[in-house]
Length: 332
Image 1: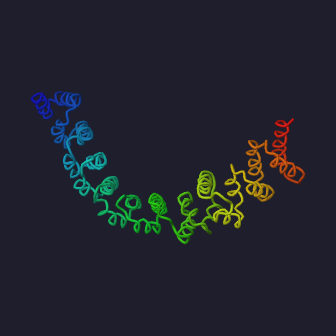
Image 2: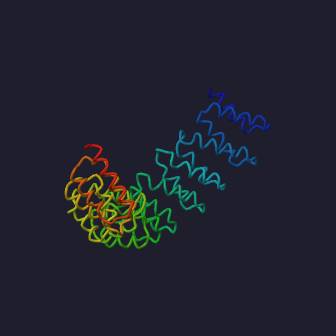
Image 3: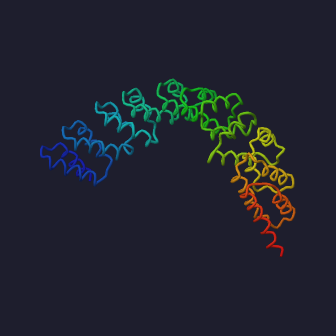
């Protein structure tokens, strides 16, 4: 087999282009990593088809042959060859630091970013974090902040980065390490328009103006995440987070937090919120609709019937009437 493989490799230099093309096909079909050695000279071939096959051979067999096979690509004048080396770095379990260092100063953006990613995910990541934090490329600063080599102080410094994308990555990294933000930092980030969903954990842990502003801005998925975080953190309306939101008149958030709670004090608060006209009537009608599962509770129905005697939008009255009717059906 070895003789046959060497014979096919030698045919890659044959004068007859048909023999050379045939050898390429045979070697790819054989799929033995050692064949890669025969494709290295083809990186400089005049025919673009052979150059492309040389790159394909490296993509196919370099990992099996080891990181040293990338050096010829990393030092090649062809941008395609250098990009090929850069893109392969992440596929190696072995140390690729030496190759990454060859590419990290390349003029090509792809080469710089891929090699930086390899350095920052390696065992010596800590040694490279500061280097990339000072880069002009926000992408590299994001990689550095997210790296396992970054420390708590570097993540905190990332919050002050000129790039909002870097700030958000710093926030995500801090959340992953359970590193809470203080009030001033949260307010500053909200003022900069940072994605509020990344601030939820810190805001709920430290209820204050940041929690209020986050509640004011929250919509869609962010609102759902905020309510979920409040449900996990708060068991009573007396908890600081809920009191903070009530005092700031963030009634919609509190109303959603109340869903599923059924103590007498919770019901009292719920009906109080249902009477606040500034809350969207569709939102309030949904709160009543979600009470249908409790339509057998007489005290709840008594409250609904009192509500029906008052002046409210028809949408809310219809929802309350449905609740009352459901009770009558269950108790003929």
